[in-house]
Length: 545
Length: 43
Image (cartoon, rainbow over all chains, first blue to last red; front, side, top):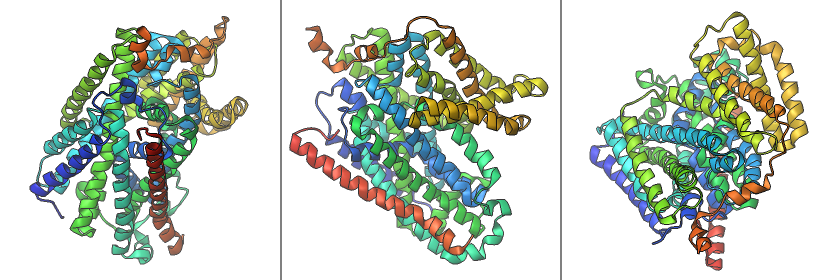
């Protein structure tokens, strides 16, 4: 298999991060303001917003996992990864418009939750966002280490270190503004690489004739476009996570607050299509490998894309692939750093320590220090090589527990902080109970969890419909879906623990939040007050004078 | 599933990605011109 020399690898990475750093200098300001550091000018145009959203949502794992899915499940495999991932971007925009309407000057979603429910709810949301961003950062550094290890004589740790320092170098000074500005260049590099690599590998493997000569390598299920296994094992758990990732990920919230309000819809729709095209397209490499009868090195499906590139592409195209993967993981890692900085600046320092009267200079310093500490932490955890998949599932469920309480709190004035906090806490405990089988899931217990999980499925579908079509349709879809799914899920879901536990989190949070809220007979919350409490920080010194 | 369908299925995604690239480059160019004309920052 083709490998770069150590010198070439270092040169490529230095060149990539050097150019990115030079790009970021174009927007560097001597005196950054805190709001710009977190959410830019709040009126970003369509092109930059859509490009940044797409680049951020595509990370290195998107390529590997889509190709693995294509290889494992056949013709529908890549779709069951890329399509649901793309929907995560699409389904957040109706809710995003509501967030912007309530708090045009917000920096984080947790900040809005502080105005709505107070400190505890804010810290629950901010805490889950911080954990998620650190894990995402670590996953991207890990992917860089793995890529460098496969394609060069350098070690995993070398790859992690160069990437960590490279990403920090161009993000540290201008924060979110650097992240967004460099996202465009990184996305262009990614698309150009994908557009060249996919057809070249396809025709190198034999073109259309491959589908005749290699058809015997696929099972009947892999040839089925509506494969049940692909849906239940890959698509359904992803579908459940659609809203969880969109609500729980601060990188999305940050872009929602940065784009010009009337451009939220076109930006997010374009990002949805862009993400789907690139990720499903690269997932096709897995399908082609399956038709060609290629066996992944060491049986590890993550090796498929680098292996195919190194085997079937000329060296300069392997360089393209290398840049594409480094670009994908760097654009997500810089967004994670900016997200973490915004969370610590706003939710820890601004709201908790400075009590809404922060010193902007100190705030900016804290943001930059957060990035340095987060990078060190990301590098450290990455070198420990934890089980990434388990951590992602854990975070997905953590976010699943907050989706219903967060969304419903911003539409229904009767929801209290008590309802929010208990709903999240009990949903998380119920998830852990099922996921790690703290009690035996059989008999009446299994029926009870299956019932709650079915309710959870209704909640997911109801919330999605509610976002686009309003309360009435959302409620009816939720009720109808729950009733229609009951005959299928009872006695069935217990065999799919991951799906059962995720849906249980949704069902429990919805039950508890709605139950406690209905007991509240006090006045409705006035949503107009949110805007008064969520403020622009850089104007504070003038206001104080 | 026919060979033609599968070929189209594989090559469709790079085609869409090309269209998205064109759309984004055009939009960013417009954003840049607009920002220059108004004396504002792009981001």
